[in-house]
Amino acid sequence: MIRIAAVDDNPHDLQLLQNYLKTYEENSKESFRISCFSDGKELLTDYRPVFDIILMDIEMAQIDGMTAAEEIRRTDKNVVIIFLTNMPQYAIKGGFAVVGGEEVQISRAKKKAFLDALNNYLKEVAK
Image 1: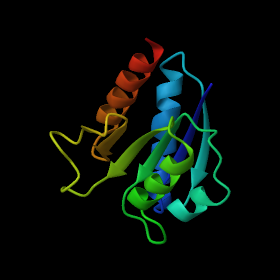
Image 2: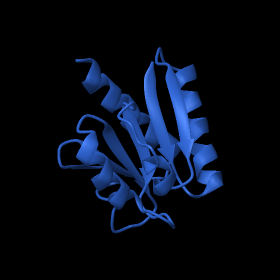
Image 3: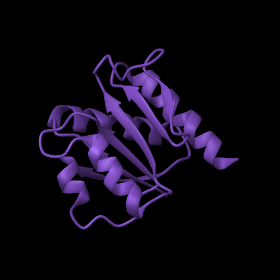
Image 4: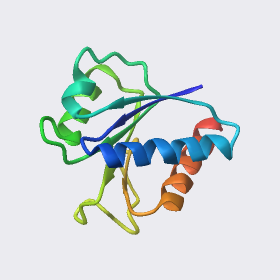
């Protein structure tokens, strides 16, 4: 089972993300345990390195995704952080870019693009 934290301060986007993950589960052999957080601050409260993947919005009201990621990296070097954004300055070449070898940022543009990116990541992990 893959443990995923989904972090977004927009309830609609958080629900959309959960739906995408459920679609992926239904069409693959993967199984997810999804924990949802409404802000970077909520994720950081009592954070422990229990997640395999963190799907995190960049722009949030209390603690933004970049700041939360910096804090998480102090105690958890292994979790993969995938940034979610609709901000064009972060969307590179169709919305996908590898950052620092471990972090990936994607734009929230299309379901298929998101599912393809997740699938590619999971294939790499399985190798």
